[in-house]
Amino acid sequence: MKYVIYCSKNYLAVYSSENKECRYIYFDELDVDKISDAVKTACFNASDEIYIFLSGALFYNLLIEVPFVAFDPLSKILPNLVGNYHFEKNHQSSFKCIIHSINEADKKALVSYIPEKQINIFIECFRQYKLKTVSTIHSAAAEYCRINKINKIDIFSKDENLVFTIENNDRGIFNIRTLLYSGAAENTGTADEDTKTIAINQIFEGGNSALLIQALKNKRIYSFVSKTGFNEFSIKLLKDNINKHTLILVILLLIFYAGYRYAIMKSLENRYLELKKISNSEFKKQFPHTSVIIDPLQQAKNEVQKSNELLNFYVSSSNLSLNSNKIINEIFVILNKHNVTLNQISLKKNIIAMSGEADSIGELDKIKIEVANQIQKIEEIKILNSKYKNIITNTGAEFDIEVVLKNQ
Image (cartoon, rainbow, N blue to C red; front, top):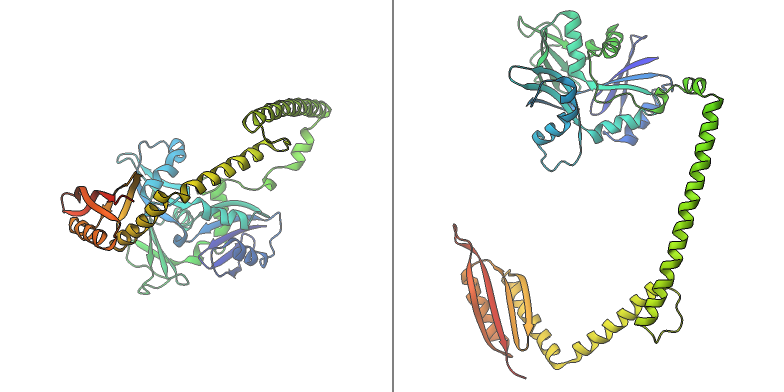
């Protein structure tokens, strides 16, 4: 069975090529699990062919300047070109594209595009069936226009409050839009003498679904995706083409591969034993007091950690370190109060050097006064250098400050 499915943001309208009835399947959001659960209620068979046409609310349309007008080469680079025009500049996903028409004179192409991760939702939801295509409502409408010899058409989707507008000519679609439905026009009749107005279901009802499928096969309608799923591959054809010589060749290749893998593993084992011998020898040189060696790398890390802890203990126990750390912490409290960002700090003997950024030049004078008045063990504080961060607006400040500690 062949099914044409119109997909909106919250429902699937399922049209059979052999049955005139339409079934509606609803879901809460565009999520793999939600749509998959909804699809299960349709009771499709694994052999069923699925043709999906997306609502204009699920993809984007773009008139884009192109470097050349050859269709096949342009199709390959178009996802990269579209990424430069996409409104979300930090968008990380790649895109899938459909070319509706190319204006050779202006070097412009009318395209529809969709993030690849959104297309993957439909591929995953219909992976148990023969998903043949994921295309656009505008592509389906263009084929409807071609069959019925219509140049301009407005397609109303009242459930979505949308209108899909297509302008078509002998060279293909040259204008497409997705608009909010105002309710001013009816689903039948014409908006003006040039524009045909129809409801969304008329695109797919009756024999139109079968005509759309035929248009896809004749490549008058293009898809965001090519054929998907292993079920497109003929198992029977594979069996028919495997003969005795092929099997012998496959067995020989497997034997060769097994021998190659064994040789690689043996070589890696020998290399490992050699490196282990070298690491044990080096460990004995660096840490001769250790008699038992089990894991030289981990034991070396432990020894280095012990040495660092001992060094930190000696440093932290010195008078200079204790006093300096306390004073630096008191300075940090004052700097934090004034929203100062420190870029660098250093301590040499009894001099603390700091560089960073403040809100203004005037703020530096306040900091200098507070540090001098509140911290008793400071002999002198000097602003060595200060300048505006933005010289055009005279805002922000960059500084270098030197704090001289009293001799202990």
